[in-house]
Image (cartoon, rainbow, N blue to C red):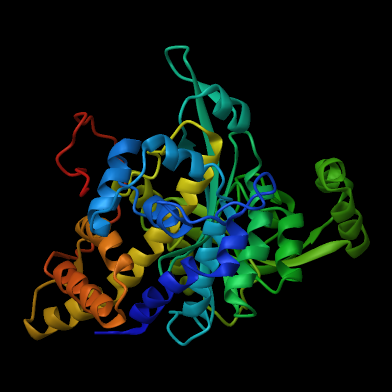
Length: 442
């Protein structure tokens, strides 16, 4: 059983109780918050937020103190009042601290020496309050009702299953602009490690390619049908290096949104890139744009692009298995706090699952199963959520490690076969309000 994630887990109580984190948790509006001894100090507020199960506020607080081992507890109103003083960026800091420990070691899986990241946006449901409609914007549904919605953008490591950064913005925000905001936080986590960023059709642009190359990041974009058509028509093969001219027409919109970047591209004059025309197993034709070196074959790049689907699957995990969109309260601050808190919990669950899957795969090989096996993610989430508080309030390090080992052993009991099905077009099926294959585990 790998002990590396257990060492990371053991650092969390120290991080949460540190003076540095207390300072990060304060907002400009409450610079002296969390200085007094209260029934629910900052450490408990953070743990209760991380342990969120989508219940009512009163039940969340009640369950937290039950799992903690009793105590007077606080009222729902007292808990919410303290939550409003917490700077949501404290959860981003916890995420960075946790992941830096992973990426600074030899644990990360790589492809040809590169970390492989995917970026994508997703519309998310937030409480339909006037404050959230003002903060994030709104959409109108088929019944003419106005509903608050936000845009969530994220960067995920598709081989190691971690979310490195999220950006929460208005529903009308630009996915490209949010992608640029990811760069600094991601680089702070992975350092100078070589990486490739995979993105779908909403992201390719001369500006994005330039920014990523300046940061030393390889890119792999899928192009839209009409993107750089002149250069594509001139190609003689399906995989060629081409020169994309920075014409006035191509820089027109950029001159309005980012004039400084447009000026830089005007000076450079062109972008050298690699364009690949592919036909997927499904029969769909796609065109990719990349600066991955040509000594990596067309077929390998094609298989790499298909890994982008991992971020779509993990959005499904967040929304449908972790009740990501079940926000604590109506205020906008809870949206930021809860989204970031659940990303931390998701990453910790994946950390345990990595170790559990290693053990499960070895057991499957020993028993000569027909198919490889992996642990059941939904069950793993439920077990982790159920024991989260008890693990992290345990003061004795050895006892905490024993609780973690027991958690992993229990997760390993629930496994599924990994079957590779033929690629086929996606079909939509009508389902009940409570489908049998999408029941939550907590």
